[in-house]
Image 1 (tube, rainbow, N blue to C red):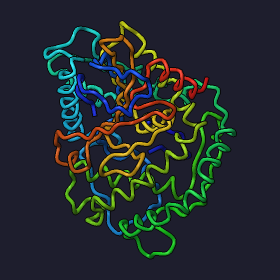
Image 2 (image 1 turned 120 degrees about the vertical axis):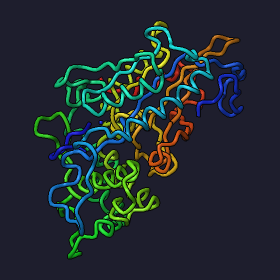
Image 3 (image 1 turned 90 degrees about the vertical axis):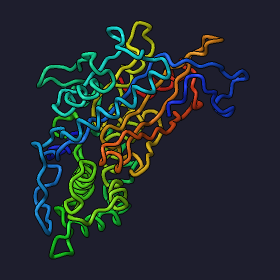
Image 4 (image 1 turned 135 degrees about the vertical axis):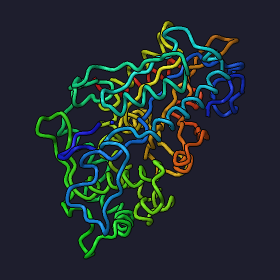
Length: 403
């Protein structure tokens, strides 16, 4: 979840498989690795557009298509997609002996969600898929409360300085105007898909690019082309993965290749809100420490799911100093149901523990069709090997999280 002047748009290898020799610099590579537990940091499922996601004043050549649910709500298709991907995850976890074939013991699976309807519904759907018939309930705070795991800035959970944040983002991006210039071709493509007339000034509102501290000091505000086009690009992707008729996906002018290019506009939003080291340190602070505490707790769940938003996934990736790449999407544009998997493994011979990172997604075509195929790409935290000693992983990640 991110603060803006208008409403914001927040491969598992087999357990016995040996990793490549380049994965470790230690003289003795581990053998016979067993997966002990997994933390999944995940974006909610396919939803209807948010209020304000298409900015007021955006011009189009034809009306927007209707959705089967109210704004921001998870769709029935999105619920089924989450149940399907959770069932695929379950098959891997059973093969890895992280989960039994029948219902796991009480507390072995824990699902925590943010307080929005779409995240709660996503957590419930994932619970049905990963443990069918086992009655896994999603945990969350009460409505109206702010969960610092998912919304640390709104919760005031860190010593966030909005002026320092703006300066850090400007160093990281070159400034809001420069960020807009870098994405000029994608903005022009979006104008062609929107088909507004007359042309010349662009279809979204033509506001100057500006970045400033939020009035309450607990966030930052972005204005201008990236703010306005990022949400529209996301809505077009959601139309496609929801399975709307192709004539209603960007009015028939947004094919998968165009949607991938437009995804760079949505990802550019995270260059501002999560990807600079300063923003990552604050946006991932509470979530990152929670991940480390879960991994270190011998009595903790075997599987923990943190069901939040794309902001949470990109913030953790930024704190890890890694990029998120998946088939069919722009770099760092997290799709519905996309997740970072944090596995803790134990070497059966030496007892040493390691952490392995992966990025699990479903392609736009698979999401559209409701298929079960997943893409799982390896991630590597900057400063450590692909198979990272657990104590080193914890030390490096903790050093990148704000107080």
